[in-house]
Image 1 (tube, rainbow, N blue to C red):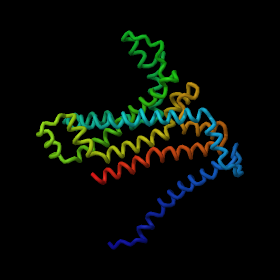
Image 2 (cartoon, rainbow, N blue to C red):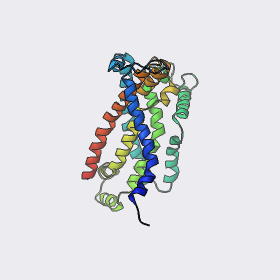
Image 3 (cartoon, rainbow, N blue to C red):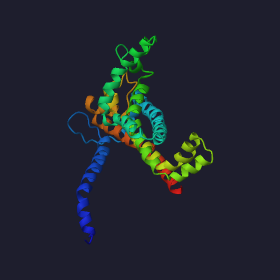
Image 4 (cartoon, one colour):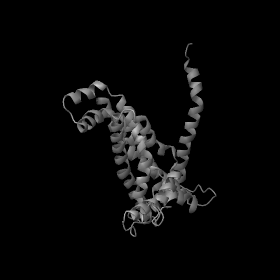
Amino acid sequence: MRYYRTQGLAFLIPILVIVGIFYGMIVWNFVVAFTGWQGLQATWKFVGFYNFSRLFSLQRFWVNIGNNLRWLLFFIAPTVFGGFVLAYLLNNLGRGEKILWQVFLFPMSLSFIITGVLWAWMYDPSSGLINSILRLLGVNTSRLGWIALPQTAVYCMIVAAFWQYLGFALVIYLGAIKGIPYEMVEAAKVDGASHFTVAFRVIFPNVGHATLICTTMLAITTVKVFDLVWVMTRGGPGVSTEVLPYLMYRLTFDSRDIGMGAATSIVILGFSAIMVIPYSLWALKKWVRV
């Protein structure tokens, strides 16, 4: 059957319309961010960068920025590293591989809501699983408040997200490792290379595309994380665990400050672009050279 360009375009029209609506919403959001819209009734009075200046003057905004950076630093690298190491070990395991990778992948089938409820119970200082086990081992848990303490709450949520997304990184890396020519790995082993050398000098440089996918997807996840914060801490204690999406929600729906909420969403968009685009371009150029 002869292919006609107009027929192909006709099939693309529905998805183009949907994508156009999404981009139209982004443009609309930009417009709202420069207005003085407060309350339920739309106010289209142009106020320039007033919403942004008010946002940047909030101390809790900078706490949110710091928490998002903590998520980026302490969530992405361990998840990527753990996923690669597990993928390498399971690839050399043999028959038990299919069973174990499904065990690690299972948390990905859960929503962040379920994960948040589960880990909030585990972190409960009085009746949680973690402190109960520690008490059985003779450990004094009176100072182990976990998510009840501002110093540890963010890192406790990061551990919960690590548990959920480790399987994602594992599957991506496992598929990439299986695509590497077997002769390359065997040649390294014949030359006397250790498992560490094979993993990080031979295999890891050849799965750059998997690293790009994992890092990009995890970075997007950290920038838009909301569910865990809402379920586990509601931004507390105080505002110590708030992140930018949570602040946007509070400003928009609790304070009814639509303009500042839209300004926060633009900051999130810019934050995402700064975190993801430079690394993606660098990784793609490096991958093409290789």
